[in-house]
Length: 173
Image 1: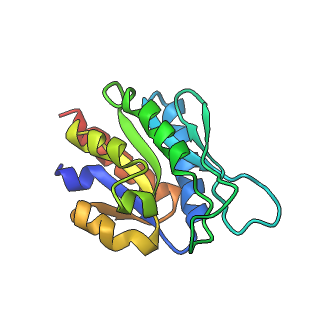
Image 2: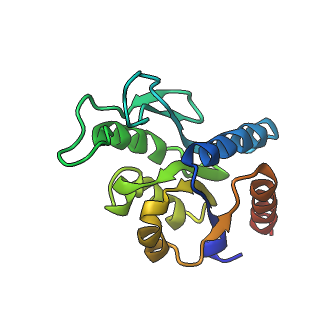
Image 3: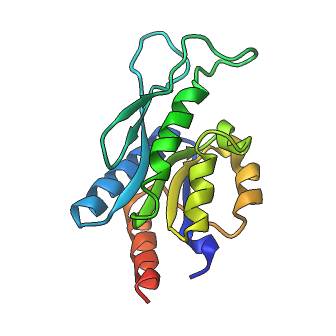
C-alpha cells in the first residue's frame, strides 16, 4: 500500500459529522485492540460563540487540551488558541512510535500554515503510520499539496472500516 493510501481524510460539508464518525470508529477500533494515538475535538459548549473550538482530547490518555481563546485573532471569528494545539501536538509526538494508527482531529487553518498538529502529521508519515483525520474543505488545496495520493473517505463508518481493514492488512505483510 502506498504512503498516500496510508493517509485518509474524511471530508464533507459538515465537519461535526465527519469528526463524530471518526470518534465512533476510533472507539470501535480501540475496543478491538488497536493502539490508536491522536486527538479528537470536543466543543466548549459556551453560549453565544460563533467558533466551536473547545478542546482536543488525547485518545490514549484522555487528557484535554484547551484550544479556545477568549478573543479571536484580528480579522477572524475563530477563537482557536494555537498554544493549546501545540501542547496537544507535543504530547502526541511521544506516542507515535508505539501506535498502530494516528488520528488527528482536523487538517485546518493551522496545519495549512504548517503549524498546529503539523509536526505530528509529519512524524506519523515519516514513521510510516496510517493516519486519519477530518479535512476542512477550506484547506483542501493545502492538504492536496502535502498528500496528493491520500484516500478520501465518505463520512460513514463503513468507509472508515474498509480503509482501516485494508491498511491493517497491508501493514501485516
